[in-house]
Length: 267
Length: 310
Ligand code: SF4
Ligand code: SF4
Image 1 (cartoon, chains in turn orange, green):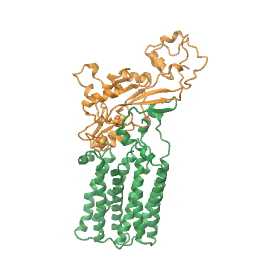
Image 2 (cartoon, protein in one colour):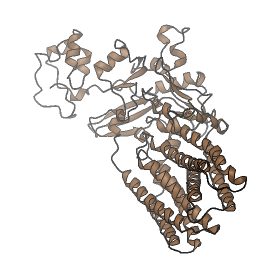
Image 3 (cartoon, protein in one colour):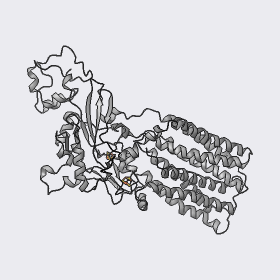
C-alpha cells in the first residue's frame, strides 16, 4: 500500500482550511500538542504540519495565482529517514506512511535539513520533530464512521481539492485522478520519489477557443475538457467509453488565443 | 542554513583535533623530525583528546535532548551522523590502547603498537570524513552536495592539525621542518580545493521554481508563503539570509582562501625553510580564524531547496 494525497491545484482556492483543520486535529492527536509560541504576542508562531503557499505563474496581465498546499509527501525514498541517526524517523512497510517516534527523537534537526520540501518542524517545547502523519490516528479508527476515516485536511477542504487514498491500487480514485489529470510529483529531480501528487491547472477560460458554435462541446468528458496537451488522453477516454477526443464538428479557431500562448488545448 | 555556534566550533575543533592526532601518530611511528619523547607524547595526547572531547561535547549543544545523544549510534547503515558518532566513539578506546604502553613506561614500536597507532590515525581521519559527509550527502542543499565537501573537511582538519603539531614538535625540541613542510602542502591543497568548492557552488542547480511547483507555463514567482509569523523553517533552513545581511560576504570567501589557508601555508613553508617557530604560532592563529570563518560561511551561505517554497 502507498497511502498519499492527491491535491488539485486547479480547484484549490488557497483558503487555508486544510492547514487549520490539520492544526486542530493534530494538536490533540498522536503528534500533539503542536506548540504555539507567543500565541498572544506580536509575532505569534508555532508548529504547523501543512502550509499553503501562493504563487503567481506568468506575467501580469497574463498571470494566474496558484495555491500550493505543502505537507509531507511520504516519499518512497525518504532522505529524512535515511539521515535520522536514531531511527526515530521511519517509513511503515505496510502503508508507506512516514512517521516520527517522539520517544526516540533527540531533536538533532538533521531530518528537517534533509527534507527538500520543508515539511518537518521541530517543536521546541517537546524537543521532537513533528510532521504530517496522514492522520494515522483517524484513518484506521474503526470507531469513526467510514466516510470520516480520512485525513482532517481532506475532510475540511471546501472545494474538494484534496483526495486521499492508496496510490498503489490502480483502481483507487486517487490513482485514477493521477492518470486522467496527469498528476505530477514536486521536485522529481531530487530522487525522493514523493507519493503525493499534484493535479495541474485546467486551461484557463480565457485561453480556450470560443466554443459557442460547437455542438460537440457538451459531449466531451470532464477529463477531456480539463486535460492539457491531449496525447495519451484520447486512448484512455475512448476506453472508458467517452466521446472521441477530437470532435468532427470542431473547427480550428481562426485566431490562436493570445493570452496564454503556450497553453494550447486543442490542436 | 542556520549556523549555530556550537556546530561551527564542533566541526572546527574536532576536525583540527582529529587531524592533529592522525599526524602526530604518523610522526611518532616514523619519527618524522626526530623520535617522540614520552613527555611530548603525554602533552600531545592530552591536547588532542582535550580538543576532540570539547568538540564532541559541543556537538550535542544543538540537540534538544543532549542526554539522549547515545541514541544517535543506532542507524550506522544509513545515516552519516550515526557513522560519525560510531567512529568518534570507537576512537577513544582505540587511542587508549595506542597510548597504554607509553603510559606504562616508554616502549619501542612493535608490530602490535604500530597496529593500534595506525588504527587510531585511520579512525581519526574517518571521523572527519563522516562529518563532511553529513553535509555532503544532503540533496536538498545543492551547495553542499559536492564531492569536495568531505575532501575540504579532511584537508582543513589535517592542515590545521599540522600547524598545531609543528608548534608542539618545535616546543618539544624536535625538528619541526618536515611536519611544517607537510602542513604547508596540506594547507596549499586545501586552499585550492576550497577555492574550487566556492566556484563549484555556482554550477546550475537542477531545482527551480518550475520543478518545485510543476508550473511550467510562465515565470513562476512566490507571492506569499502563507504565514505571517516566524517559523521553524525560516529560522533553521532559510538563514542564508544571514549571509545576505553581511554585504562583505564575497570578500569573506577570499579571506578564507587567502588569509585562512594560503597565508598559513606560506608561513609553514617558511618554518620548513628554517624560519622561527613564532611564524608557526602566527599560522596557528590564522588557520584557526580561517577555519571558523570557513565553517560559518559553509552554513550561512548554504541555500536549501525550501527557498523555492518561501
Ligand atoms: S516530504 Fe520530507 S519529511 Fe516527508 S517523506 Fe519526503 S523527505 Fe521525508
Ligand atoms: S530530529 Fe529526530 S527524527 Fe529528525 S533526524 Fe534527528 S533524531 Fe531523527
